[in-house]
Image 1 (cartoon, rainbow, N blue to C red):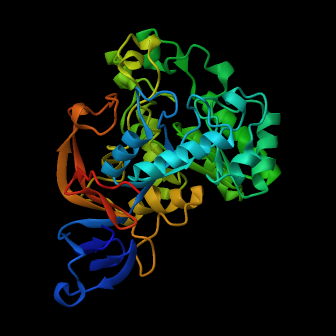
Image 2 (image 1 turned 120 degrees about the horizontal axis):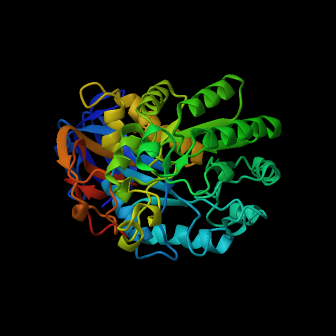
Image 3 (image 1 turned 135 degrees about the horizontal axis):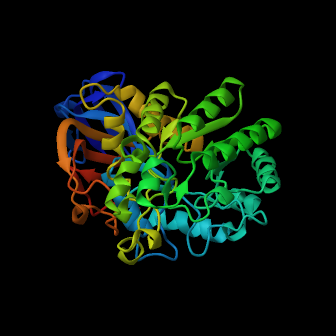
Length: 437
């Protein structure tokens, strides 16, 4: 049902209001009388004590389909997204086959539409097979039914400066962007965790911060030279923040994201040798975490992106060196973001909406998302309980995988409802089963 009356929600920036939705769009905001306005085909949702946010938008999701349906599918991944408050996710290209052709990105988009839990915007590969040698079919993907605007070899760095320059010149022609996984591969060969005191103590090869910073510095210059847009994925170091701040001050067309785990966890977690904490880029020092949090508030870091990376048990429940990097993020990102922004009592909900919804939607070009409710807009939003807490139980997550670093933790804020074009994909904290488009 796409007709709903949300009663007494605390709308960010507007205060307590009722929101009437008809045919998937906001029809009225204010004090709406149930008797005079609501017909029998309108569902009433009591939102007293709940905060209404524009639906969250994730710039960095790994849905694994096609090719690794044992770890995640578009259906399971978007169910997890809805449960986490997301109405749109951008699906990374490192599937099997790689999303480097119009056919593959159109398949991913179609799977998202069929699932019906969140809009899925495919991200196309920059290079064929993510090999960093030849440009992928960027133009064909942009002109396809999937209308791809973001391109990334995430999981691999576009380390060849000539290829990166050509990709930037190409995407500039249709106002697209390249999302860069900043990692100089020659500096991270064999790396297992952040390079520092902890890696030295544990005897694990280190991933130096300069490997990220060197690529960010180079690509800032390429962005300025070409006049194209560059987005930096999963920024993780203090010096990276400095470089991005300086680039923005000069007017470079650069944006950046930070992952929830880089806002909370540090390389000290590696002392457990539990591969759930192995991620790329790695968990950094406490000093880096503090700078990332401040940069998120300041806006130097534009967005929180989950880097949701589900893995099948055989790829994660093994010795550290053999484990694949990555962790789940969609269902916990909102709670971790609230913690990073000061906790439930101190969080500025407007800043949270900006970093998790409005700005990511603008970066990705998702015009129907990241919009505060007003008459005529699509009803894509989420209701959260700021006073509630929940305990992370891996078996209770909607994802097919279980590799969450927060197992057993009590986290603040719960998602009570998520609406996609007025249809409740989550209601009373539970996934709705009849949401298919």
